[in-house]
Image (cartoon, rainbow, N blue to C red):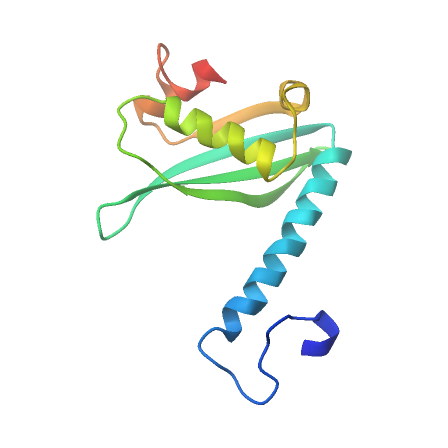
Length: 137
């Protein structure tokens, strides 16, 4: 099976501590390539963002992209970013735009044309009517 999926650096004789991560890295590359192709083909995309706090009191934002075709949504994990300490929504805006450009390979025109919906948790940084992420998008 491992030779079939062509996992580089996979130990042939036994598992090592990093074996699972080698598989995950290869699967992530395939998922990103698949996501890029689907984003090219679909007419619309939508995003959802969630701010998460882990035990170490570190903030992360999870960005999910949904490709929308024929009234069906297919979810994809676009990115997970560590938040820098900032009281405004410029940081999440930059993370969203850079994720769409770098990971999904969308240019400004494609983002403006295809992005039809953005959902986020209820904090003002995301949904504030003056300085929220929605205003910047």
